[in-house]
Amino acid sequence: MAAINADLSVNGYTFEDIQTLAKEILKHTSLRPKIALICGTGLGGIAEVVENPITVPYESIPGFPVSTVEGHSGNFVFGTLGGKQVLLMRGRLHYYEGYPMWKVAMPVRVMKAMGIETLLLTNAAGGLNPKYNTGDLMIIKDHIDLPGLTGECVLIGKNDTRFGPRFIATNATYDHDLRSKFKQVVLELGYGNILQEGVYIMIGGPTFSSAAEARVLRMFGADAVGMSTVPESVVGRHSGMRIFGVSLISDMVDMEDGSKFLVTHEDVLKTANERALLMQKVFVKFIHLID
Ligand SMILES: *[C@@H]1O[C@H](CO)[C@@H](O)[C@H](O)[C@H]1NC(C)=O
Ligand SMILES: *[C@@H]1O[C@H](CO)[C@@H](O)[C@H](O)[C@H]1NC(C)=O
Figure 1 (spheres, rainbow, N blue to C red):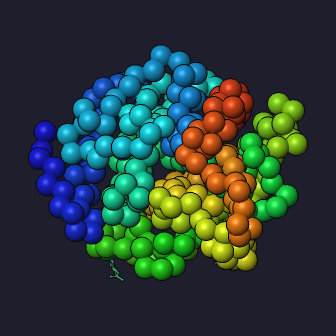
Figure 2 (figure 1 turned 180 degrees about the vertical axis):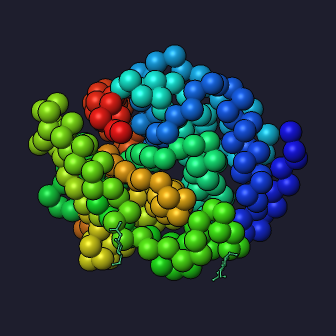
């Protein structure tokens, strides 16, 4: 295997490094999935229903970054779900762990090099829209890349067009057909009452928003707020993938000053656990419908 000489400057992984990592991971399996799912906080349980799983821990992949957050275990899982070959990423990398933004989404480039065409993203997010409730599922119809707007776009760096073009449009990032298929599945399972569709805004974290910040985010037009997903969807779009994203509303963000309610990471995990079974059912049927 060629050495990975990732430096910590922008785009530390060259195109060749990414191909090397992809080859290294694919040595573990003869499966060649075209669908990948990145599991959000507490949502790794979907891996439990993957048939004939082959697990590849990040630390077994020379040169691959490891995730350190509680609720994220840090491995790729290959297998079958809903009759389709899939690749799950359990344990995403977050900006708030100290990774530079480009590194947060480099696994998506590795996925592209492994042949992935459709990228499914999940996360746990705070509800900003007052019509939402804890436990709702929000299909992401658009996003606000707050770090991107303030100079931390994931695509800042060298212009290597083998990854994708220098300047990209981000309109209609979230695929219409995938959104309507997901909707169909949730309705068929009888969970229409918890289904929402809205705008996700990314903040860097690890602080949850203050009440004043939450009011600003709502004024911007966001329905839910979280600390992930946008870098991966932007890099996926840049790579030419089809993108779908869904947020589990793990708590309602407090917008009142002096409120007694404070969200904790444990609250987020609790909601995710309560919805684990539902997420498994939904994703099995959803993935079955994806071409
Ligand atoms: C990016 O690289 C491509 C291919 O080398 C080149 O055609 C293009 O002009 C470059 N664009 C910018 C803005 O540097
Ligand atoms: C994004 O906008 C451009 C320019 O209006 C349009 O040509 C393109 O089809 C849009 N992309 C999608 C995926 O809708």
